Length: 461
Image (cartoon, rainbow, N blue to C red):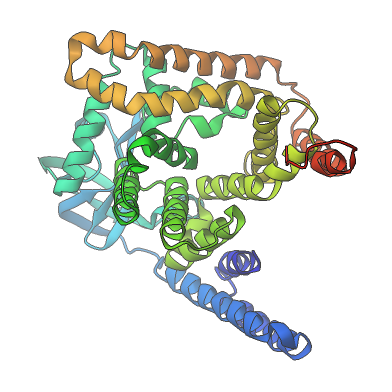
């Protein structure tokens, strides 16, 4: 865990002061190695990783030099799906080796709609530099400039992988067309993170109810995907199972446009599959720490993604708190486990929610208990049912009936949570959650008392 913490701090602080960070880590390592001799090799290793993270972060930010205003004309690659925000259509394109944000209005914006990431388009316009606020918001996507579009002409399909992913997304879209607009938007957001059609009011409801992680793809989608395919994977030999798991997770990452939260979950799933295959010890805490360290070294700019923060926070909360809470909460196991998991995940993201959104909803534990299990069912059922409904249209309504019921339930939970949530909570919601979790952790674990009781079975609850 120390390695992940040092890496994260080094990445975050090295944006503006890389030399100071490297010097501080080096001095701390020398002092620690001098006084903690049994752990000298560990201290030196952690320090070297921290210094490497600082250097790579400084190098990544150095690429964001102010872009000179210049005309651009030619073929560009679409990186993100075009999304309408009021009168404007936004997307990210790659011009040569530079990623730029496009904001288009009027007929140009309408011409961009309906197309997908991975396609190539011929356009002309003018490149401009990013404002500081745009740079902070778009850095994790490696966007270095904005592009004002004047003309959009021909389109060409992209690589075979992107074509296949877009076809699957198209089938899921057509396979959910019988739903209402809000239901379809949430359904596509739940299963593949396609949130371009989600109404602003719906997004606000989910955020107020503490369910914003359900409006877009998140790390839990990877977990539910593996659960859905586990009956097949278990029948395979270890080597083939490992290969199939890598292929399945990689394909899902492509399908969901490599969202930061999916990258975290995919990397963690691949580490877990590799550890299982090789017979290595891999606790959840070790897996998440190795994942965070490795991905930040590969792409330090992930640290500026809110989705990345929330994903890591929730996962770390689960790894550190889920089992201790489950051991201390009284009640039957079937209700204790969901409560413990929800409390652990919400505790992990509460500080981030306060820092980014200015509040941590007090009803989030209740809404997650009511909404997440049903949303998980929709995630597991939705991809095969959506594909079948898209291929065989006459049975689409019947096949998608469970998805519609589940999606309506999640929408209802979000709306009720928004109405119930007290308006005064704000940041107090996070404090209340932390106090509750702290009081629970002060209790004696149930299995300890059971072992000491006469005649009690020596099993862990």
